[in-house]
Amino acid sequence: MSVLALDSFTLANRSRAGRVERDGDVPLGTIIRTDERYNRDSLFYGPRGWDYWNLLQNPQVYQDPNLWPDKRPTYFFGQLMMPAGSSLTILGRFPHARYFKFNFYKFERSTFVEVPGAALAGYDIEPDPGSGNPFKVGADRQVKNRNFTMNVLAEEPPINPAERPKNTIYVGRDENELMAGFRIYVSDKGYDGAGWGPADTPSFDGPGITCEGKLADGTQLSNEEVIKQFGRAMGSAPPPLTVDQWHKLFDSKENDPSLTPATAPARRDGQFELFWGMKYSLVGAFMSPEERARIPVATVMEGGGDPRTEYMINFLSRKFGPVYFFRAKLPTFPDTFAGTKVMPEGQGSGAKFKFRPDLAGE
Image (cartoon, rainbow, N blue to C red; front, side):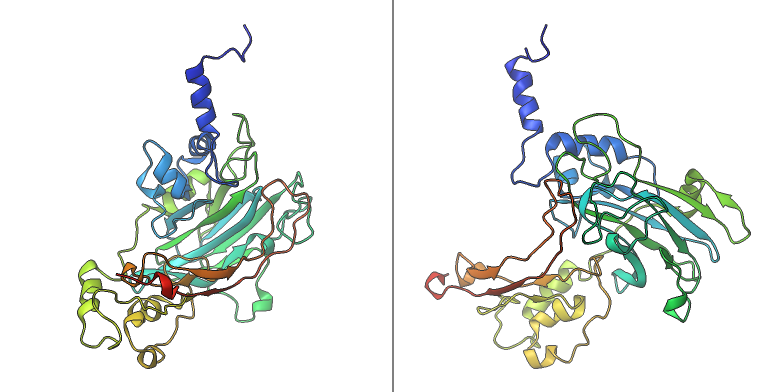
């Protein structure tokens, strides 16, 4: 019997497994396959992201993207503690994707804050001998050999940045619990959500990331031993502001007099602006411009965001009208989804936003 002679029920479900809302989304069937491949005991939990949390039948708690609601990324994050003098070696493969990033965070001010200098974007990672880095502008994105090695040292970084070896991250000797992991944005068409294996066949080259470790006394650790000795249960930071604290801000007598409790902190002429930390961007939104300007802006990324990404924030209220109208210039980006052979140049953007007066209403 021909394998194409399938009943209508099977065909309908197979069609649904490949359906997407927009070009570039990960199909449902691929989401399930990605979860089956990589959702296993690891130092970095995953896959994590909007689609895994919302479309899988029984997602794990650590798959909740929380403050990262984008549909296109796949995250692999974990919490760990490295004893002073220990080291972690990460053996990986560059994914077939638009963007790739690894970085560390520490817990401060009720949120996860980037560890300065403890991050490597895909285009900054030196490939292993005989391999190529597909994320460098002009590089062969389809290069077959695409391995890399990164080293994480529980040591203080050298005073002279020129003495820092390539692919090396320093997290200090204070033995704090850290969060670390990988961001993979927009895997190529035909690849799973992580960009490490094909989307439509069961076979692939194995996990994209494995680890080895070493203790200060020289004891070598296998991948399983690293997970056992360095890994910690994946948790989440409490909200920077509790619900009660947030509601108290609405009625505070110290708010900008131009705000009202019914719309605060939204403003009729509110504009999108860069995110400059929890205190400036959230609490400061209730203040007058003069008071807010006295708040020091955060010099490191808070909230677990990508340190190399510029996030924009605005507060809106339907009290000003049912539609928020804005004009914007689309950013440029390396259009890689279709399997571009050569990595193109990326990106910049500009935008202007405003309320349409003719749509203002109750």
